[in-house]
Amino acid sequence: MSSLTDLSMLELAAKLASREVSSVDATRASLQRIAQVDPKVRAFLRVDEAGALKAAEASDARRKAGGPLSALDGVPVGLKDIFLTEGVETTCGSRILEGFVPPYDATVVRLLKEAGLPLLGKLNMDEFAMGSSNESSAYFPTHNPWDLTRTPGGSSGGSAAAVAAREVFGALGTDTGGSIRQPAALTNTVGLKPTYGRVSRYGVIAFASSLDQPGPMARTVGDTAALFQLIARHDPLDSTSADVETPDCLTGLEDGVRGLKLGVPREYFAEGMDPEVAGTLRASLEELEKLGATLVDVSLPHTKYALATYYLLASSEASSNLARYDGIRYGQRAKDARGLKELYTQTRGQGFGAEVKRRIMLGTYALSAGYYDAYYLRAQKVRTLIREDFTKVFQQVDAIVSPTSPVPAFKLGAKVDDPLSMYLMDVYTLPCNLAGLPGLSVPCGFTQAGLPIGMQLLGRPFDEARLLRIARAFEREHDFFRRAAPV
Image (cartoon, rainbow, N blue to C red):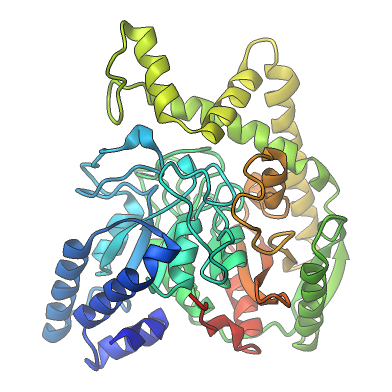
């Protein structure tokens, strides 16, 4: 039965449709796989075995009656612990929300339930999605299934590791500055950050509201496209949700890249990139050219300001969003506080980890009366320039190709005491969030040590279907997409 977990989401869906296997079989296989490997990988914060099996039984009953809710009805998936899930503890990887059980579902969780997908549980993450290695989780670090001594990336590292370790068939993550794409690159999985507003943020615990975006993570491009289509819906409960038509990403998935112009930004191939990553990316670009694409040298001149701009804006929004955790309404409360001020300071001091405190302090400073114009306002102006760079480039090309991460998966603990070095892990991914564009990370090879390398595709707003099409053309040429991690 464990061999079921080697199937892709679409392969399992086909077997479910033909009644060759049942959703209960697939869900039990996933639960067995979790019990087998998660003590080493540590991707899950909590497993909802009873809830998943109940949903699987309901799915099998619908199949038997001839009325599945969707093509993926019965395919088990996992959720990053940032999505509110009715009746299931949701902590966002933080002690300050320990014991918090939401009374309702996030919109994307509701959509998955309405499509009939059993939810296996909540996946580990960097606390409040702040981190690039999963090591700022308040509970424990997740380990990379390709090398258990290394990070799976972050903040959606639990989602990426669970997919790579075949514990789940697919998962949802969130991407604020690369938190879907970077861990996807480090774990040989596919991760899609949709256009800002394409997927509802309602019920997603906020980090930086103008940057956060939920998205799918899976083993194949087709799985990613299928999962994306389920959650890409306009939502009146989210004021930033875009009222655009849900794309049909599967119909044109096999159309190839012939005739497409792909931009190669010279600023993304600068110093500091691992030589093996650079070499693999160059080889991948040559392959795309052989498949019929035209490579175009382009420039995104304000890229050099993106890192500073992002961390000022994201920290400022985090400072505002996290002010709600005061020990009064929900989550952890300091027990020995005397007076309101002491309740605030002790609750937040005990409940927040070091990285969250660091970003709250930075954001509060940037928003303070004496420094607002010098830092926050100036960062917003630079953000506009970064967005304009992309707008100009997309007048010349259909998509942009770049590295996802400057380095392969690094050792756990290697950057914990060097925040700036950790922040640099997102240098290629965060400009996409500042501009609100769709981004996709797709596997493109391995280092000599067997560590995965990812290639990033960036597109015009709401052009996710084209990115998936390009990724699928590349995927058809390689078998490493389905290569199993050695865990």
